[in-house]
Amino acid sequence: MGLKCGMRTTKCQLLVTSLCVMLLGLSIATLSTVTHYGLHFTLMSDISLDNNSYRVIHHAVFYFGICLSMTLILAALLSSAATVRESQCLTAMGFFCFALAFSGLLPAACWRYTHSTEVEDSMMDVYDLVYEEVRRNTSSIRRYELTAIHEAFLCCGKHSPFGDTANVESKTCPSGPVHDVGQDCLQEIQDFLKKHLDFVSTLLGITIGFTIYGMILTSFLWFSIHFSSNLDRKGKYILRER
Image (cartoon, rainbow, N blue to C red):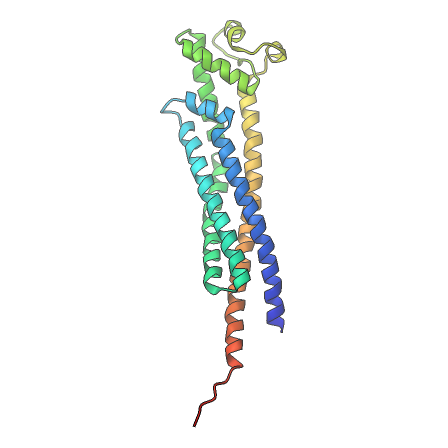
């Protein structure tokens, strides 16, 4: 009786956890898509040079996020099916998907804290390159790109040690309060990325917690199904005809 009650409780908890994991998987997929196709990120990726690491990071984050979200959704679906059908095979597959997602989430969280400045530096390097080329009047295309950056981030120029920048800012900054205040674009890019990465960190932390909980529940459900089936077999008898 105690085993059956424990199994029912585990099944209810696993169904709720599976629903939450599915929502988290959809959230990660949405965030990855927004990061990849969002105006700010796409603009900087298109402008960056081949030797800049930002473009590589930009594409790698998208593909990793999509694969991770698919793994989480698959784990949620398998766990839900295993709960309804009480299948040891489906439970084991659900545990494997949870473990696979956890093995991807943990390095991602570690990379977020150990390489947090790499993304900021690579994106600000893109802005520095475009800004200095426009300042030296070496490319008219760069002037258009710099104007697009200013409009996207709602900023105007930067503090440059190489001389007066009023000429550059007057031609590339959007008209209005942004131009009048003269918001530093490097600071605006850094603040924008910080807010975005803080949201990513929160989502990763919540997902890691639910993934660990999902692994615990699926393993407990597997053992419950296993021992329950053994107990059922012990109560059956076969009569032989003489």
